[in-house]
Length: 184
Image (cartoon, rainbow, N blue to C red):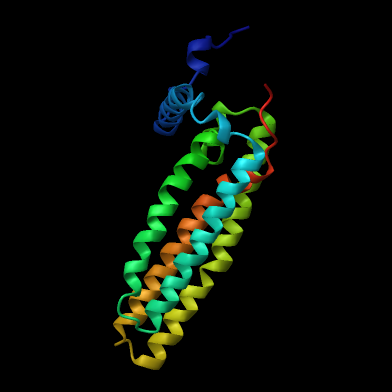
């Protein structure tokens, strides 16, 4: 019988395979670097506080976009305080949850992959539905104003940015909320 040598059966890694391997190595390196940071914030209760803070931040960001839609002149300045709360809260949530929401599959066990994929699926569904708000606002607003209202365009952009940022954070927020306390 003529057998094919094993070297012929093994295909060269593709560009995607090489990228995924690089991503996994980078993720594991960063995980080792941040593993022991903020131990007091790794409890489920503290992670839930961070998720609630982020939720209020997104509501505030959306409210700022609505204020911009009404043409309130200084409303865009309120975006900065929202960012001052968002970036630290998001960074801390990512650190204490181990960045499981965007971890490469090779760095997770089967249960973690299943949880991550479920959270991502929910995030995608939420994105699709919530993006309808700024889309319809811009479509109908452009129809009524003839496309000349700059406040409407700016507000629609802030609405879309808020929805996309929220949806991008949602998998980590879900995982931060549902994951139990780490074992000692």
